[in-house]
Length: 93
Image (cartoon, rainbow, N blue to C red; front, side):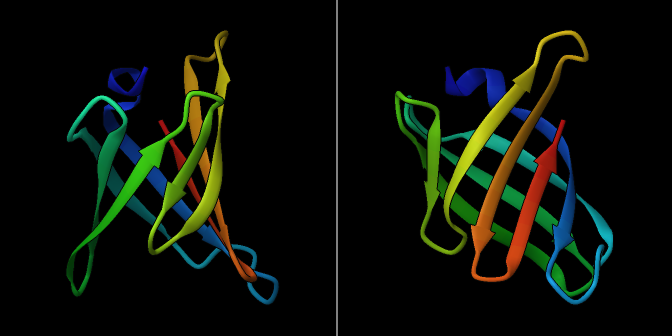
């Protein structure tokens, strides 16, 4: 299942004060059957986020906390959403 998540994404970061903090690109690469790495390109250089995919569709990242995956089959759109405190990181393929 995690191989379907591999690819390039748009990253939107949202928080309670500012609706959008900017749009960046991210790439998701599988590292094992249940683990993947998110590589985010920033103006300060690359950032890595490792995450684990559970069988029930939840994801968990050490740096981003718990998240979930939604998949829109019609639009072939996969969205991973991590909520860390007030910050929401949304990766959309």
